[in-house]
Amino acid sequence: MIYLYSQNCFMSKIVIVDDSMDLLDVLKFFLEEKGYEVETATKEQDLISLIKSFSPDLILLDIYLHGEDGREICKELRRHEETKYLCILMFSASTKALANYKEYGADDFIEKPFGLIEIVDKIESILETCKDYRQHQ
Image (cartoon, rainbow, N blue to C red; front, side, top):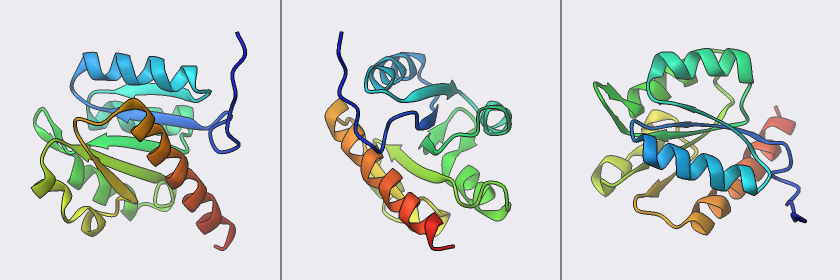
């Protein structure tokens, strides 16, 4: 099978954080088919371990996790030198929760339910923006 990779995604690493195993499985499979390296986490502790071992380029972070708030996780990531420049795309079914995503340090957001092509377009856009930003730091 031949795959066409965009320059943005070739070998880019993504960590998806959600408490829905079904969503994690679907997104992981789809994004890997698009050329991304993908790891998944269901809670903040798993995310921190993956950041250290996997060195992702982007974190796809749900706002509502069992007993945890993705917005607070995002704020915490922005406080630390080693994680403050990670690309972060937040998602939620609650548009109200996503309305102030920039206050928490996210680069962008996407509302659930989202289409698979829509999420790839959003990821590619954020990766390009972050790449440009990092080059000017």
